[in-house]
Image 1: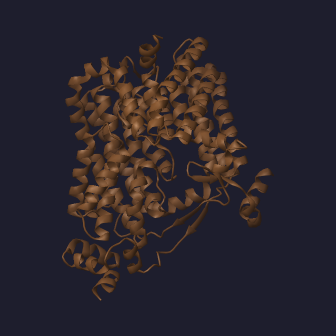
Image 2: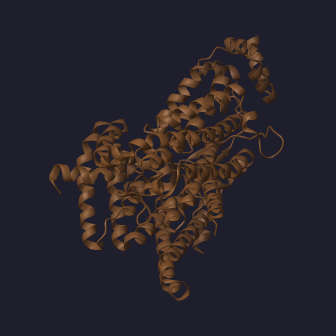
Length: 148
Length: 451
């Protein structure tokens, strides 16, 4: 039930999305309440898995292997938490699938403080690079902007 | 089971996990490498398998990190930051996939050159090992000062060395009273997750959260991808021109020898040198990218292997950060006294099992990134939230700390993460400085206070 509302809030309701405040953690934006829940869920699952292992493995395995197996179950718990949190909390990032840059080559070159004419002349004497650009289909761009 | 087979399995595991993690941009190397490598060690993997796992992980992670760097113009990790300008030039020329291919090919070549170079150089430096081991406290302290000065905080990082050492020694003593052993895993985990932990703390603080608030979700622009070769496994030497391959090889070789310097610094420096030797926008960008990505691999590999093989004590930025569990993961590995891969593997084994890891990573991450870069990026961007990723790493760190020392371990990790993370984020005292101070704190306090 709760999951549905979260998903809805994320996908459909764009007006609400604009009012939403985000915080930036390690270079990406997250919703404050969700990150807290996610940390709590992950800690509970991973340490919970470890405790579960401590209770059940003494009956199943040798005593010296119990801590290692329990640790493994704890990792299982944290992976489960990752899957659960990824499903509960959809990413808030916005992905735009842009087409190839539509800027003119000349603009790009000028912005990089390169001279289109000189660029073209360099290519004249450099068959290797010239061939690469030709295969990529952008040699003509260089020709047009530099070769006149 | 045969050690070789176990090593192959662990290398496969490392390659697969880190190929996936590499797709997540902006992930901090230390925060991710440390807990996962510790897990492998504590689960009882043989030393050979630990090395294969680590090498496969490093190469896979860096190779797939090239994807967000090239296709979206955001650095995959801190090492990718110097590559962003050249990558964005190619994006603007409409050929981001070329940036990606050149980086991937450069990375594989760099890794293959770094390993033998590092093993040979490590063996050579090994003659001085006794001196380094006996003077380790002093060396850590001097290195802490040096690294501190070159960190973002500059003088404040230098100034904080003694108070931070005092702080570490104090909580070490208190936790020793409680659990009757000196903790170390809990310390490094705290330092490793510090930056993300402090971001969460800041977001909870009514007064400080403004600095992290954003009005809208972050936007990512993903460029189209065009496949330009037949088959599944493009030959790296065919992706690069002969000149680019030679320059990448040379840059990787030189940077493998400078194992005590910062990998980001070496990457920028080598990029500048190669860039200045190539004229023309396209040629400069592609040549620099190939060489720089080669250098990110070679510095990482050499900085882990040289100190490990030669001294057994962590004496490089990588050895103090992402590779620190290879040196110190008690009770399995310790660096004081030295009882880790340094004693357990011969130089020949370092080469063999390192190569195994690199080869398996090349077989998995390289064709994966070449063929599925765009589809995989879209999947991660759309389905795996940052919330879930950050949550998982904090959960893993707490699990490992709990494994080391129960609730005391978790408390210690959270305390270190809060203090270290805020020092890092607010004052610019980097994790490398903090790890150095951790290793040197015993020496500093005994010299200064007779403790």
